[in-house]
Image 1 (cartoon, rainbow, N blue to C red):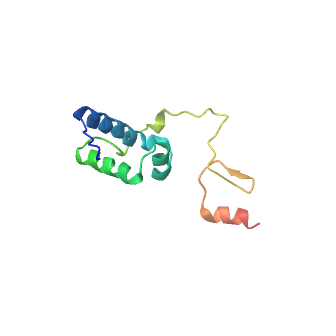
Image 2: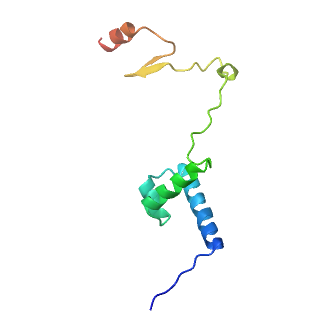
Image 3: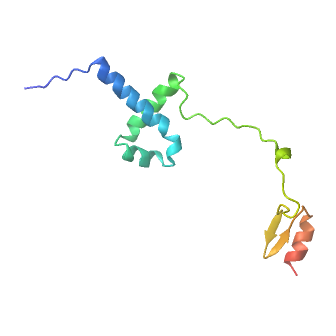
Length: 108
């Protein structure tokens, strides 16, 4: 005797919503796809299927974040605290210098 499974539109919609949430939350997880799929109990193949499906519908998933410009002129450093340019072998340099100068310091 065979069982007949009928999927309702409600079930399909809830699955689509669940998969959209899973795919959307992936970038912030800090995990590999394999680890993320195991944690969410889905197959990698399923993850990539839904990822492709949402990309095709132009849903913003796994897109690059917008980069905002930063005005460095607004950042102030107190007078007694100069920014460190370079440090090597205990030598601290607080301003740009020529590479030859650095080589001379290292080779002494």
